[in-house]
Image 1 (cartoon, rainbow, N blue to C red):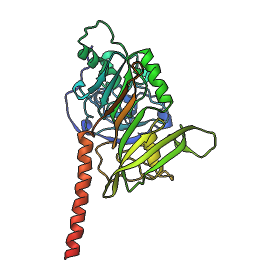
Image 2 (cartoon, helix red, strand yellow):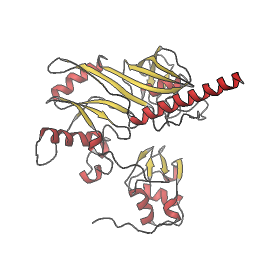
Image 3 (cartoon, rainbow, N blue to C red):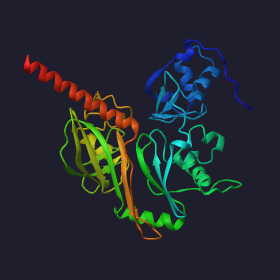
Image 4 (cartoon, helix red, strand yellow):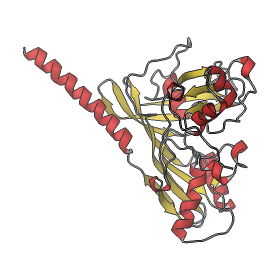
Length: 347
């Protein structure tokens, strides 16, 4: 039975809530129940409508399930306006396709893979907030002109990009390809280069540390304890110096979760638009005045040896329009400041 939503529009439909940590006495409640407590006077149907119309986030991720049970440490947010609808498959580009693997241009704002607890969701529910893992098999079927009954063959995950990161991703299509690519990722022989915009000036360098899941504030990060954590190595080079900012080329030697974001933040230069790793050691938030449209991180280069044919393979993907426009704004602002300084000097 389809859900009937109230059609009225009033002050209750224009509410918003800044991100808040789930109180201890609300652990285990549903998302709808928590929001209803925060929105006195709203009916259950009105609260569910807010969720169904893409207004609620849990831990920064859009949540369309009013019945989701919330856990300790999670954050909840209610947006003033509905979040953007899922990317249609037309925005996803297949750069390479063969029987063993597929290389894809991932747009920002879409998760690479689905969380394990969501894998048993119905197809309809998944399509409310699809992942790259959900959409690419459909594109492959269209490209190959195959009409199948039942579920499409699943892709095999060998690496992933953060939801707000754009760039190149490879999926394996067979067990043999998954094993072959996995060995290359484990041996750190896969070429993975990113572009990142950060505040201030960063010099070329090699960053090496050991990562732990909780550095003491609930976030991933580096530790100074010997023999603890996993090695993380990032090579940083300067692509362009901008007024007050630097466009960096970052090459991964290892591939830990959020590695580039953590290393740059711990260096004192968090990626522009990063809403997770922008905290100072004392717990305060480092202000981001860049105006970045989203996380300014892009996987620009991917290269590896084909796991079956042993052919050298390599791709590059230009910055998407949103980050191109962001860079141009930074350049233009810098030229304006320079012109003002010249005018003052002449006068």
